[in-house]
Image (cartoon, rainbow, N blue to C red; front, side):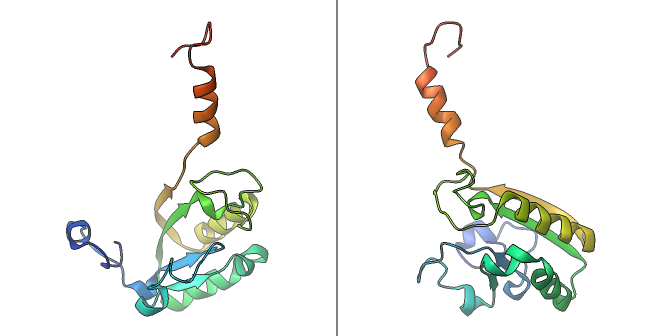
Length: 142
């Protein structure tokens, strides 16, 4: 929606949009042929997990090339390797470690004015499961 692609009923109320060539997707580790069909077509830059795994430099260089001074960070938690602990809706291995995600965001914050942060896809399945198991236990509410 932020690139004004998609359902107009969702994007038209936005106060502004961002040109697709100023959007980067970082850590596409579960990319299947048609799941991100419009990335190249719209001009969105995509980084697989291998590039930022060792260094934030490729992303920082891309940001510098855009000429931006402010950055919004959007984190889908399923970018984090599910082998470290599944956070999102899917249990997909091969993502970045929590430490790598943290480093990337800190590096961006050190070089740019971060003006927005969103966290998405979080689903605390283990917490929900434990709550279901414990429902009705003595001395535990609910």
